[in-house]
Image 1 (tube, rainbow, N blue to C red):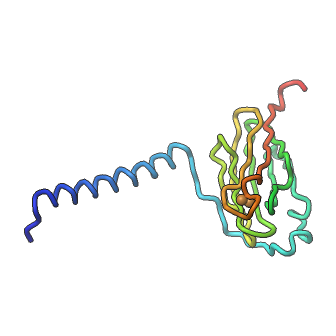
Image 2 (image 1 turned 45 degrees about the horizontal axis):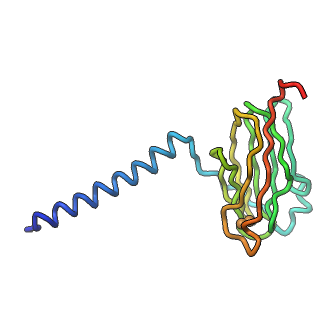
Length: 161
Ligand code: CUA
């Protein structure tokens, strides 16, 4: 098969671009430790009030020092708010939605997940730097989507208060 010289250049240029784009995605995901959150666990979004875990979402410190945060997203807020966690401790988030699809992104960190009705998204993050981090919903969920924000407060438990 005879392919024109210039057409061959463009074909290889297209292949090269795709390779660069794919490499960028894979490379950045690896270097930023981005991992897809689990959506393996199901839950009845209409019965969160009866769920021992999600009827009263909040921060739980386990006996081994690890921290679990249960979060319910709903139009147009996150519960609890603010979320207070310590620095340098693995924090496992368990996030679900009471109504429609929401996002749960902690800006300035690699914590980013969807909050879907019917599913529990779970991921674990360690926050080395104390401070206030804004939590945003990054899935369009309705008229007040832009105002759906929360706050994560990370404090160093060793510092005096
Ligand atoms: Cu919730 Cu956008």
